[in-house]
Length: 459
Image 1 (cartoon, rainbow, N blue to C red):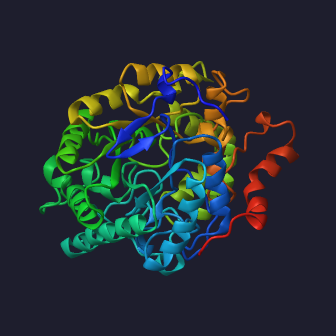
Image 2: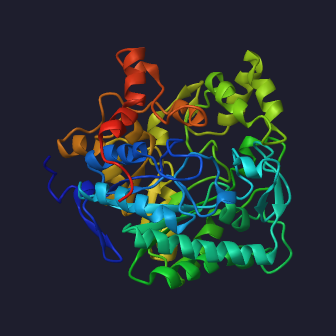
């Protein structure tokens, strides 16, 4: 498969801390419950990631890899919590490298945002910067001790070491979307009064300590990025009576400067204080499908039973959908405007880039060559990350290389993929994109068929 001229911004290579990306499109963290309950890796995981490497992206960011079992958000994702996981990660990385594609392992700790606790942690509140439950699900939390914080910092360093030993090309640290490190960063969540709470610098302390621990473990010549929420001022969008605003883009710009000083290589810009959130993933909220998958969380959060009750009545489902999108600029007359979703974070990305002087990776509904070229050419960001657009069309980069501006059947931003992920394989579940219902299911289960005859994990 050929590539376009390097005059095309999409196909201009870029080097960050010695790591050269052959083009400017990477797959954002995207996974599903396709591994084993104990965090060990399945062959389906290799088949899953291979389809995107084969499709032409320059790098893949793994699905969230728990650094400890009590920080795993949902069982069924490959973890990196023990040295015994290194061989399977090594096998995966080797397979992805066959396609001239880099592999970056995303280090993750859920904190209170633990959607489905492993059996041993059911009923045990997730450690956090607060003792209050989250606004969306009511997931229970307890304020961590200083000793527990020090242990988590150490464990991030150990997980980074394992990633390097596995041959990964870099790591990404999650500090966004309401997970643990973001719970400390956010002024709307962090209620501590010790050295890890209060002003912004204190709230950022744990993240800066994690960067120091990671650098001590992997050295300065290993790619390290942080996924950061640019702003939390959409905090109340999922809870209409909540008045806490959270971090502003100016706060995130200050954090970005501190991260640069600490030796970070790049910032991956996201948005919002929870996942899901009206900005991540932006688009519709399909309550008709969500009410079925969401039931598995019934005993996880104090607000889940009420949410499920509302989803079971058509009028209340419409109210939830209205609340989800009531202040979204892309909703007019009840219609979705895809052109307003694509690249919706690039203005904030440009601010972060200017403030920190670091390369910025920007996520945000991308799937069309024109807007991607525009953002890159304008210098708003350095790399584009795509999740749903590649889920819908794994060969998207090859299509751009052939001169196609957009896929024939683009992602509709319906978010059925996201709401089904707790119970079903992560796949495109928008039937209108397929020639038949049977074809949709065939595509969803294809990676399991490939795994049965493909590359096996381990060594």
